[in-house]
Image (spheres, rainbow, N blue to C red):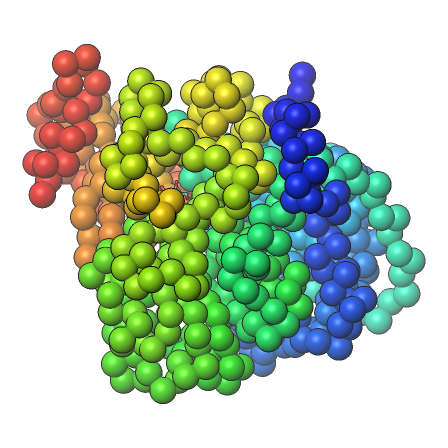
Length: 531
Ligand code: OOB
């Protein structure tokens, strides 16, 4: 059984003929730069104290050394790996090292927990797990022992072991570069999910390479770009839109912050003359607040990207006057399509739209519930296909049937309208997902978890408005016992290994849940009741 839905041959041919797919492996992003600009600083890792710098040559050497090490451990092309690391230089070294020998990683978010890791392990049965003792799940050996027990062919390393290996002055012979098919899967991205089970998104060398190249074109990045990483490194926004890979492709410098707070970021912007960064809307609010006192620290910053969740136009309006920085809205998805407002878009467009597709070969169809296209300015469901939008989740035929129309358009679940200029405005969403300040919660996943509690008879997880995060989650529960408390519910979810950000922010008990005419839980009514 094939577990990967490839781009149909006629589309692949079209993207190649247009010169969009160039049949290059993703690792060329780094190695081309190391050859052309070996001395240029690729990374300033300020998540470490003191900060550490790596030139392109040094980074490439580290990648080669680690690739050789992984090969010695018996890892081979087409093996898979689960990597969960905090933001730092090592994330990129490992990413490129695995890709170089053809191992396919899935980069778990650092705030993922046992539930997510269990799921990725179960789906991929990886040969390699890379974890960090800085994560609470690995502070004791319990979980690691369980992994080793259940997956006896899997080798596990923690970040410190690999870091130590890299700092040793040892001789190594270059790993044999995998002979890569550029149309093949390079790695898996993570889906925000809306169907109850986490899903993996295969991204090919060709499609991802193109998405990075087109992103730096749209954002006009160059070797003068100094980008501050604030978001999780694994996220599609900060990896490829244009993100860290965009920095490397442009030959710029990536500055890594330990977190998105103004306290961590403002001094770095000043010290390292950062001129670009990317934020989710809640972090932007904190930055606007801090800039009232420390705007001078942001003097070098020219552009600020905001995306991952809807940016309120009232907040958008404050960015340019209060920070003195041009705003770029980014509406993307790990599945592919990324929309950017252009640097020279007029002010209304920059403040009120979430951008337009980055590629002229992106096809966007906005449809009503029957699949018929709606007119310009009318709200409908966003569906899309194009040179960097995936064609199917890993090993998930029934989910794929739901997620794609018969022409291979991916149904994103977002409700949008399009302006005459082709820009998209996100007005809502149809999918069962809560967007907690950019962090996605699959409502069904948490509902299923809650339903496994013996005292929970029925439950709905809904979004509620939040001034900082945009949305928070609220679990509305029909309990079998008068003794069930919110504290007990939260504890139960924690013990199950649910990630912290997915634990309901509010928990309410009701006698019964309202139903729609077809007998589904009426979340719209619930949401109104919670206002
Ligand atoms: C990005 O990727 P994901 O996979 O975490 O989430 C995708 C979903 C979209 O379908 C949409 O519902 C929401 O996040 N979203 C936005 C948005 N950007 C993403 N909703 C409103 N306004 C925006 N600007 O979040 C992502 C991937 C690449 C670049 C940027 C964001």
